[in-house]
Structure formats: structure tokens, C-alpha cells
Image (spheres, rainbow, N blue to C red):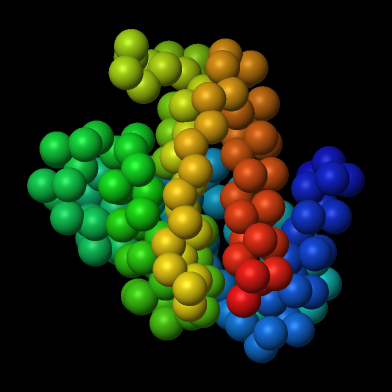
Length: 164
């Protein structure tokens, strides 16, 4: 279902989190649950994956993850503050050790000068804090942006597991 590199990354995350006894959740917007899907494609993932939040709308980000509506109004849904709040909210609401969030513009439309198509913000909340990164993938197509985002999110989870 997923390319081999994504399957390998998901396997590594499940193994690393499992070795630590950690559980995790995902909070996804533009990826629409693909990160959770990649993780749960791994046999035995039920010992690690607790849940996935697909929060495509601003209202869902607020209702399900506790992202303050004012934060979304001030910075926009595709922003570092919102990505951080999504990851923290997922970790807190799910009661897990680790949570990753993704919010971006997959395209082909919807981009602006400040937030062009292909711009995606990521955050990973772990016992050691919340890490953020932003990627500008460009106009590589909707599927390309979404798959590239899955790779980044899985890599962030792996790094968080390795760091402890």
C-alpha cells in the first residue's frame, strides 16, 4: 500500500517506540490519516499506536485537540504555533508518550504568497518537549506533498524515540 521507504520508516518507529514502552498518536490535517495508516500497516502496531486524529477543519483542530481558535485566527492553520498546539493537544488528549502533527497546503490550490502550495508544518511532542520543522516541498502534486509529509512525520517520530 505504501512505498517501501515509508513502510521501513513505519517499522522502525513501531520498533523504537515499542522498545521504550511508548505509545503514540497522530494529529493530521493535509495528510488525512496517512501517517496513522502507515504506522498501523505494521504488524504488532497495536501495542504502540493509540489513535489518530484527522483534524482537517479549523473547528476539528480546536474541538478534538484543544487548539485555541484565536491561535488559528492569528497565525493561520498552516503555521508553527498551530502545529505545536496540535502535537501537544494530541499527546495530552490521548494520554500518550509521543504525538506528531502535520498541517500544510497539499494543493493544487489553496496556496498564498505567505503559505504556498507545498508548505507543511510538523511538530512532535515527546517527554523531552515539542520539536517543530517546516518543509517547502513546492508544487510536486497533491500526492507528492502528502507522501513527502508522511516521510518527514515518521522521521520526526523516529528521532524522538532515539533521543528518548
